[in-house]
Length: 370
Image (cartoon, one colour):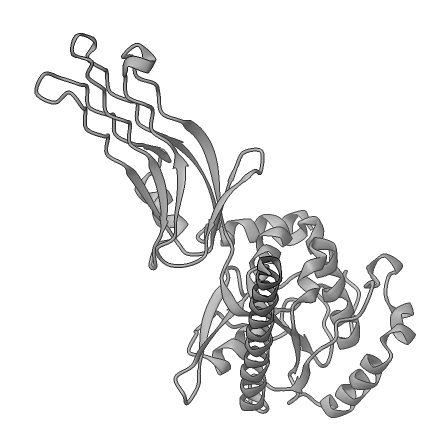
């Protein structure tokens, strides 16, 4: 397991999804005591989300990872009110969560153009401060990227997620017949005839124990958090990670994936979920699919097949279960349509809840005014 983790770390290195920076607001300018002049305020440090930016680009461009805003101008005879120092803006990708070293949340940037203040500039010298300026705020901050996508693909290695994504969208992820071919998250766009676009994130395959950060599990699982829905992908024939690992049937794989998500963050299981049973072109696939469907009718009757500590608290209720084959495209269009329908249903439900809350708020205000 250790050797596997080190290999993952090396290959994952080109994709950076977290960064630690030093930021400091500019110091204020000196006041002018004899004329009562006020020094300029120091510049602030802001983070701004922008398309086309990656954390790797930031790291490469600013290897020292230090960002300091400009100093406020001193008060002078020509300008009693000193000019404000220049703000420092750090451009980052959409989907960034910013925290302090002690994990206190500073803010999130979920849309292009969002801004968050990281460090305030110091006050300029004035009568209140005996015309002495103050230093700017300084802190260490952490940037954590969580991909924003409509749908997140969840599965164990070699389930065929990358092949499925390449058939659903125009994405070109690495595809091969061995585990861990996906070493970094891939985003694909599903295009529909009415020009609707749906983003799908192919996340690197999980392994048993991912919630404990085995196989870099936390790096992968965190990207599920900002997806609207989950698309479970399992191999109808089951899988075996290595000759030392136990063989897992498709049913066992679903339950183990459910448990990994539950142990990492139970709220993930409240997301709407679809199940794609992949590799239906294999021999005996139809019989295995029928057996899987029977097992999913009463999953509790088959929990004895799992290690006791990996039995999920409650099974996932899939909105749709679709048999597919990524290699022959069988069921691909059907899956694509079900993804669209599931997202449309979710949007309709959220809009209905939003209007209901607005109506209740209006009624509450009206009753109070009577």
